[in-house]
Image (cartoon, rainbow, N blue to C red):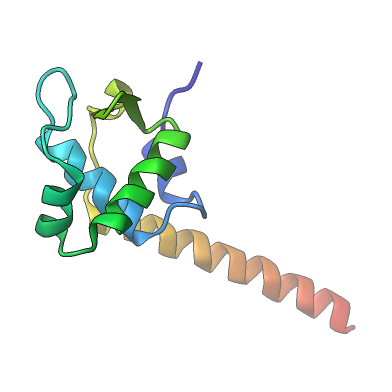
Length: 114
C-alpha cells in the first residue's frame, strides 16, 4: 500500500520547488477531513504564481498519490498529515542528495580517467 515518506518526496526528481511549495502550503491549511478549502486560483494568488502553475502542480501531486481528487475537490493524502517538514528541511534533503550524487559522479570520473 502507498505510504508517502517526506524524505522520498524531497528526493523525487519529478517534484520541483513549486510542487513542494504547493504541497507544504496545502498541508498547513487543510481541515480535519484533509480537504483543501481553497480554489486553485486562490492558492495561485497566495503563492504568487499563475493558476496554470498550480493546476500543473496539482496534477503531478495527484499522479504521485500525494493529493487525492474527487471531482473538482482535492484533499491531502491523510498519511501526509503528520510530521510535516518545513520547506527548509526539504531543501536541505535535496542538497544532501545533490552532494551525494556529485560524489558518486566524481568517483566514477576518477575511476575512468585512469
